[in-house]
Length: 186
Image (tube, rainbow, N blue to C red):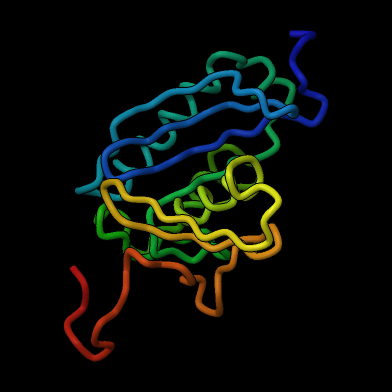
């Protein structure tokens, strides 16, 4: 345990997709200590989707349980999820690939279990920020990132910060309204 850079605590990162939940336990130096991948339950009750997320978090926590739970060194959980969502409130609004979560308070639900700060943002925004900090976007003032998988998403980073826009949906290239007064997306 002495080689772990735990002085600043540990964080858990969670990547939720339409078909999977991936999670990693990371120390203060950025080293990934444990990682896992589990199936996502995109349809049905919201609780089933939440259970998949909690299962992934528990799986990566199990490698160092004495550090994560007993010593209180888990400092927070960061979750990226398909959008649209409200990043300030941590609410997943209406993701086309996760119909189990409509106006689902993901941040609050995970915080109830772990009693640490939980930050939720759009998966493409999180990828854009990572690219700006550690990838090909490093050193650039503006970064635009597009992701194509189960869904399509885009993220924008200005001056090292995610640009959310007035409504929190800036860069939501995967969800563009053609006719504001038209039929609601399904």
